[in-house]
Length: 85
Length: 425
Image (cartoon, rainbow over all chains, first blue to last red):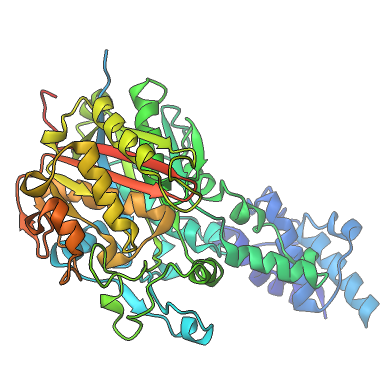
């Protein structure tokens, strides 16, 4: 699965957690979940739980801490998918 | 200076009405909100009827943000948000985005945090899946969950209190809000209470054998306060909310004033002298009513209507006896008496606030709502206060002063004295 596909899919994962739907439409790998999308930092754990379920992966706490930008989310998801493949 | 406390906004989520206009129509016409619940038959409950508001999550869409609504599962919180925000808007207030309203606080009560949400936590943790609970569980199982949602949405900056006093919770919340304003600690308070009786709480009451069980095939007949055939109460769910304001604060913003709270009392019989965990003692109840009148500087003779607790158990007769002693009035010289529970059941912690909303509406629109299902009044009650004082159809009458009381498990009592607003006090 390539990075562009995951980025498109991440829009759906992130949608319930941001009020800023326009910004969500135009996200790039540089988009910061908290600073740009104004996602409540407490909800990052919910996004991780949703990503785990969507990709059937387990994200450990150390990896989870890296997931603050769209690009780093994609890094972790690809990394974990490779592990479980 | 004696501050006056007025009611300027109402909101309600009731089994017989999801808005104040619908609720007003329902209580004028004696519309029941009690329905048969098939799930309760499957669960082998003896009581299989309940008062459940016709609530759908979609109704909250304009009340809280989409991200907040997503993941909200607690229905008591949902009912409370809707009632509180309806009351806020009814009072002509706006929802401010940036400021904190330091002069406005909130006292909103409930009896238990949402056990459906707690069940989810228990199931996940027991399955060793606590990691999957996510960030939204704690805010919904903490007792202050509802007041956190309300105060956060409205930006309230004064006291934010989550109170709990079983069936006296709602009236206690109103009295606390009244006191904060009266003693100058706040200028405006959002007060009320909320209850969602899920199957776990319902089952626990069912096991106490205090619920109505002989009318499962006629749900609308099941809640029968003061009647000979009353055989227990019908649990109900919902929420009621009121906006209380310092009179000067309300006048300064040209608010519509519905009524005035003249005073009230909240006490406990201490589970002595006949009072127990589950039954109110007469000494405490009578003292509570008399203190409410004294605090309100109101004579027993001026009470036009008693909106009782009157749940449809054997305690109804005792309650009427207590009112007779407390007011020192009886027979034809007794105020009108009604119980909203005939229509919506006993909404536990929400009872006091929903019934207080009904009390205010009866003052504003000058009527007494009917006691439905009172075809066979208990003769011992009739001996005390005469049948004329128990309307079975709506009565249009001058209603200036209402006594509203609730009595809860733990032998706790609250009585409010609510009056028509007179400009000269």
